[in-house]
Length: 183
Image (cartoon, rainbow, N blue to C red; front, side):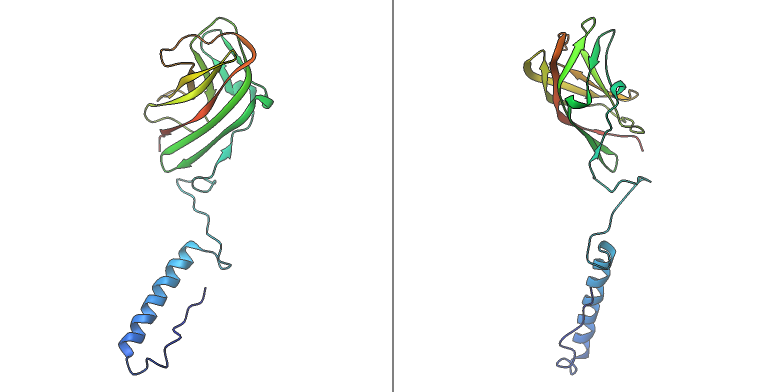
């Protein structure tokens, strides 16, 4: 962007005003160039050595082993069950969105279903959030937990932590959680 003072000739008798306008134009041009490319598009901002631009949502690739449960319970999720599973990072905050529908739960009943965190993401301090759980076809308000020294999110079907019910394609969860991550 090229700005010039269109009133330079008219203001030639007031030099300090021309200097003031030139200074303002230089400040605006400098700020513009810091945030835009030559064609006017915004520059990509990254931080903390990440290659993904600040705040960009990144899909987590489907991997069957990303989905587990506590004890000997199983949480079977197919690629088709994953409606949304993505994350974004800004500073030391990671936000994960999830929508898993039509998954299966088997084995000995337990209170925790789990989804592994993205590679390299480590929880700094505990964070909790409500979400919508689907337990064998029944919707309820569940509780998702991110906790330090654990590399997965923990999904309780409801706040008291009742066991998940065995199901064939009738379980899942959808919601979002944000948590502090390690530097």
